[in-house]
Length: 55
Image 1 (cartoon, rainbow, N blue to C red):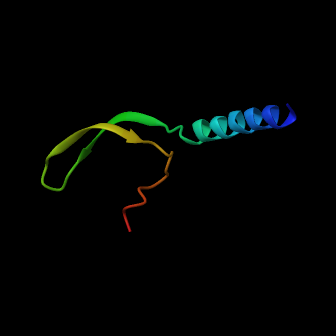
Image 2: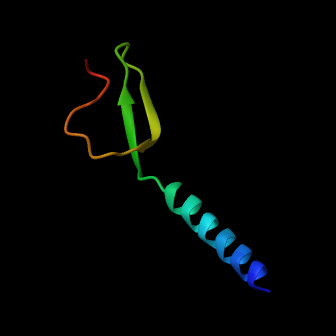
């Protein structure tokens, strides 16, 4: 019985941690390409002070 309770508890903890890790912040936005095309959709927003792709 103790092994069963331990197994259930362990499964619940693992499922909770995986679900909490999978959260992301998505905001509706758009990207303007150099060619002038505009892409609209959902963007992962990480509260960057500057774009990490501008090196």
